[in-house]
Image (cartoon, helix red, strand yellow):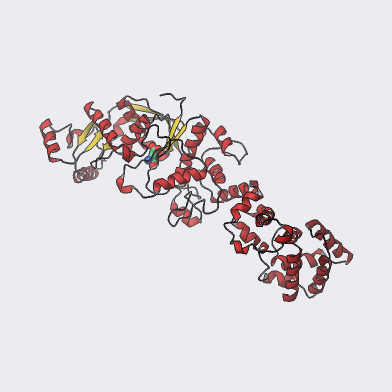
Length: 508
Ligand code: GLU
């Protein structure tokens, strides 16, 4: 195999939505492929008919596309070595299983589930573990022990069977993993794994090896739950006389508390998504308001980092810097707070126009009032751009703009009671009335001018900022929150600012 021609695959089973862990596996495959100018292939491993879930494949494809890591080859796209769904390659696997049988490297087994259970129980009673391998395969019901006639008879009767791999005994094999280094395995502890099931479908192991070979996969990058299967996979490559690809087994993604694998339940408990997109009633990262480039950045560093202080990386930087052999062996703790921090950082980098456009669908358009649009803004979008530019520093998500800046869209409906009690004194109204008259005469209602005039007026009258600014903010915003007050007044315009001041003077 030409290792210079990098071909990697992401091979999910369509048994449900893509979990964060699966997504990280896809990302590492993608980064590795791109940095080596290779191909990123999507293969759908749907040999387990019972676990097939309608819509899962489409979900996986949509997720990869949303995250910005589309596959190069796969179902319906650049089908060079397809089909890419294992269910459509069913007939092909059979011939490879038979090849192993003919060469004495696999055999038919007729043991029923009940008889195997019986063996298991008997072993347990003696304090032993039953393994179907060199130790006892000669005592079981298979083509190694039955005569040709008996086998032919079973075939005639259509008796169900499986095909098992004949695992060689007394060997130590040395497995190589890019992340874990060398691992030695004694073949005597392995069982004769089933390659072909009685339902006429191959098992994961056979289909996976045959496909990786036929699809010319150079590197297998997958989750560490497949590490225990690696010895069998090595033996299968050897049995077929094929060169094995290079393997890298990725560490688990752990719960926020640090122990155990991150699960759907952790997301429900902690109130954070574990799926990229909505799936039934589970909310996805996309719908929760995360930017795909932010999530890609965070997940890329979950299990690997370039060892510097830098935390924000573009996709291009990740492609250049990623080092598969520097991926950590230990599990990576998932930190939902950090995903929010990333989103905040990415939000700051977006232009006001991008943010305003994202904000439009969240806003009910009737809520964008006429305010001072006619005079000051050429479009509602321009107004929104101004609003988001004032709010973005405080926002983690685009949807936060509403909560942070509702007052940009309507006159305060009510005034924060606690703030008003504390800040709106008996002396406030006459003073703000005076300020109202002053502002009314301003021809330039820009933030700088309002600020200058107000401040001058405060000092000329020997007033304090504490007397004026908080109640003025209450009148404009309804609360003591928000960005620079004069910027808010400038943004909503003179008419609306004076209107709000007037209403507050009447109500408070
Ligand atoms: N179908 C397997 C899974 O869903 C793929 C494992 C592999 O990449 O070899 O995890």
